[in-house]
Length: 263
Image (tube, rainbow, N blue to C red; front, side, top):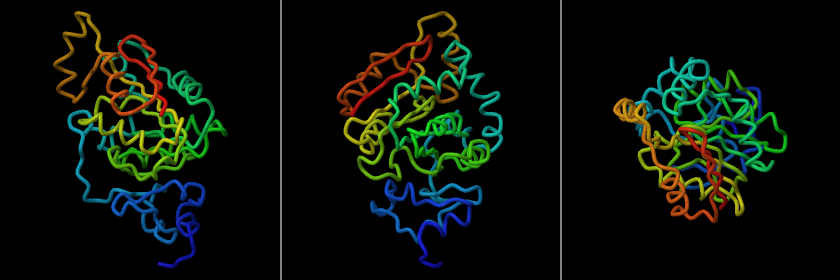
């Protein structure tokens, strides 16, 4: 492999990686990747792999389903609307949600869409020039394949939410829109997000929260069976504060809530 720079990787996928190279970190070495190494990490669909083929899949239940190629193909049209209707007791509108994310991020980039799935929000955030560059990070290759196809504007990187392929204090914002319930160790994810945020950086979290209704109690066993964990709004605020954020503001909407935390 030659040493021509990040454009070598770009020629493999029709784009260069120069713009995000200063943000990246190789978790295996805790060092910035060399420009001439990127070409070997580019998947056929055009995303960078910082995990590798032998990575263990941390999530269980619904999280393990997220690794399946068929889920990535139906996620936006069927999977996400169904789960939000059942578990959040409300209909979803990705355009409205993206607008809320943009407002809470205060128009500053770079921005990371953590557990980006098939690019539902990464693509919409990329449409705002002030937030660029936008990086979509996910553990699932099939989700990243679909994201690169359906929303090709952002950069996509395969990475572990507990050990992100990003340098310390490298980004202005991180969003996590609907995956928090899948993390076995949410505290670890919150600490890792804080690590990569620049001082004053913003973390916007959309999460399922507890509901005290008869229907909620009825479906609770189903939620547990698919790996969905709920907390109260106060419990999530406490988790965020204990991870070291300077402030956190919650906004509740039925069975889910949005949290804006500042480093």
